[in-house]
Amino acid sequence: MAADGLRPIPERGGTDMTAGPLTAGGSAVEGLSRLLAQMPRPAGAEYVAALEDELAARFEVRHAVAVSSGTAALHTALLCLGVGPGDEVLMPALSVVMSVAPIVSAGARPVFVDCDRHGRGLDLDDLAAKVTGTTKAIMPVHLWGRQGDPARLAHFAAAHGLVVIEDACQAQGSNPGGRAAGTNGDVGCFSLKDGKIVWCGEGGYLLTDRDDIAGRARALRAHHLPPYGGQPETVGYNYRLAEPLAVIARANLARFDDLLDHRRRQARQLADLLTATPGMTAATTAAGDNGYSALIWLDLDRPRAFCEHLARLGVPNSVGTFGLMAADQRPAFARYAGAPCQQAATVIDRTLAVVLTDHDTEERINGYAQTISREASTWATH
Ligand SMILES: Cc1ncc(COP(=O)(O)O)c(C=O)c1O
Image 1 (cartoon, protein in one colour):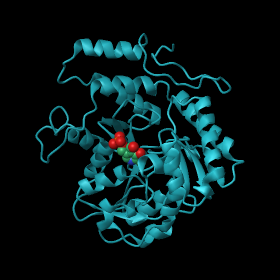
Image 2 (cartoon, protein in one colour):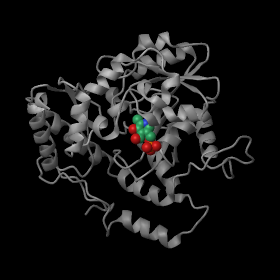
Image 3 (cartoon, protein in one colour):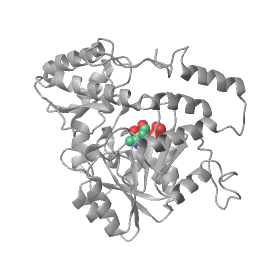
Image 4 (cartoon, protein in one colour):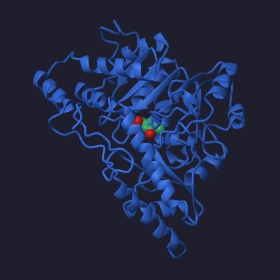
């Protein structure tokens, strides 16, 4: 048992790749016990403050602000940057519903932009074509932990006077080019939901070097109440992260490198096992990708139906399990859709993105590979 109360991840080649649940006897559980013995403490925030210090140090940014979810982080970031009614936010159609909802909640208009052929980042031509006089922000979404070219995007944003809010909820630990995803824009937003690389059940955080954003975010997440907000000029929210969840997040943050390494190995293992399967190609990855999901490009008939079929057989994946589709095709956002973002739809429909967690052993991943290969070989007959 590791000192943090979470079982360590064995080195490559071990049969047990389990990162381990929170189990009794370690400091994560001891921390929770200690805290629970003190609760209720209505104004308590020490564990959240400690988590924020550790996140800021880990990501080498001036500020980390913990909130109750990734969705709350995005909403907070938009409000802190003054995005509201009458504003447009450029964002990829290659994204999840939770990336779009905060823009709508802020009263702004999401404008969907297509992606490049590989589904890495925004198509800069389409982006340029969609800038208008009311565009206020760009929100790149690093789906499956992959990001485009942050330097080019920053250059584009600066040239057009736009702020950049990164949705890095799936990109904890991704650092292609050496700089962490979520630290390239004005503010980066992360999720701590179960299944993310560092998790605590539900939670999120913002990273920023800007003092003004951090100050506003701290006020906004707690109704602008003291000690952060003084007398509120605008309404705020209860977007606080609960103290017990901060204890869990800190324990997982302490083993971030192991969790990241583990996830990358899992993703590589599944992709390697499927390379010889007809109709499947491992998606292109970059050196710093976090391996959030194992990504397989499908050259099969009815790829969405195939993903749904796999989900029913116990292979969790973005399309089959979570109904991922290009955001501009979702009925909920129909009023914001323009010409279809064809490339985003193709990438989503043809990518088998297998959902991975700490607990997926080598054996389970072998099982996924066997199921996928077997079903692919007979898919034409379905
Ligand atoms: C890309 C992306 N954006 C936003 C979110 C929202 O995060 P949360 O579920 O913590 O609200 C998620 C979470 O799954 C996500 O994957």
